[in-house]
Amino acid sequence: MSFGFNPGHWLHLIKGERNPKWRAYYQLLWHLGGSQSDIAMVRAHDIDWEARTISYSRAKTKTPVIPRLAILSRLFSRVYL
Image 1: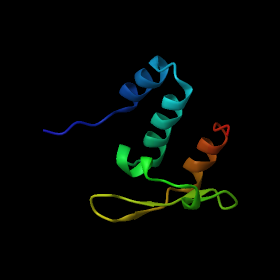
Image 2: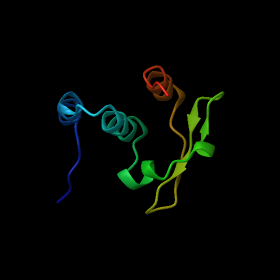
Image 3: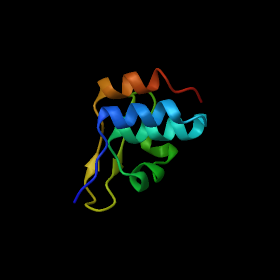
């Protein structure tokens, strides 16, 4: 048995989350496609602000991941640090 979020689940979760930090974390999980532990391990040096890329490795497989620019452009336009 596997469990995954579809867009409807994700929108319900985002709309119901009142804490902006958790909402931002959930958005990162969705847009970057990582597990909770994968995204929690992303550090400042994993982010290239000029190239607008975030790179990380999947914890289970050690597979490197660099999300596509189109996804990050939408994400970075909504993130306020």
